[in-house]
Image (cartoon, rainbow, N blue to C red; front, side, top):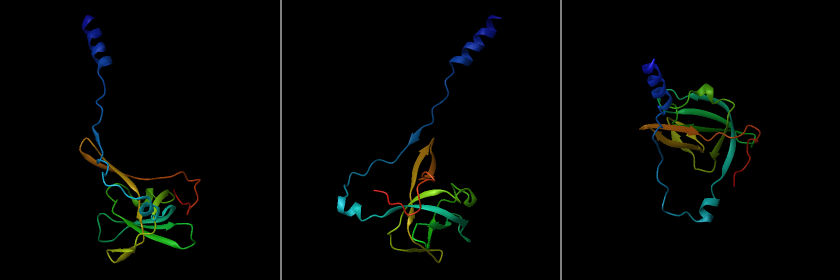
Length: 140
C-alpha cells in the first residue's frame, strides 16, 4: 500500500519537458522608413494551390490579390504544407517584388512566413490572417 502511494506521488510531481524553441537573432542593421514604405504588403486569398512538377519543395499558388487578376506566387514550403490544406486560406504577401522565374514559372511576389526551430527541428508557419479581411487589403 505504501509503494502504491509513492508511485502516485512520483507521477503527480513529474513535469512535462518544455520544448527548446529557438529563433534567429534580430537584424542589427536598420532600414530607413522610406525604404520600408516602398514594400507593398497585401492580403491574398488562396484560390488554387498545387505541387510544382519536378520539384520537391515548390508549391504553385494562384491568388486573389483584390485586383481582379490572378497572381501567381511560388513558395518553397512543400515540406511544411500539403497544397490542399492551403486552398481558401487568407495569407500575407509582398506584391511589388520583381518577378522571379523558378522551374520556368514566373513568381510574382512572396508569401510571408515565420521560421523557428523546436528541439532542433526547423518549423515554418505561413502568416495566416482572419478570413474577414478582404483580398487586396494593404498592411501598414
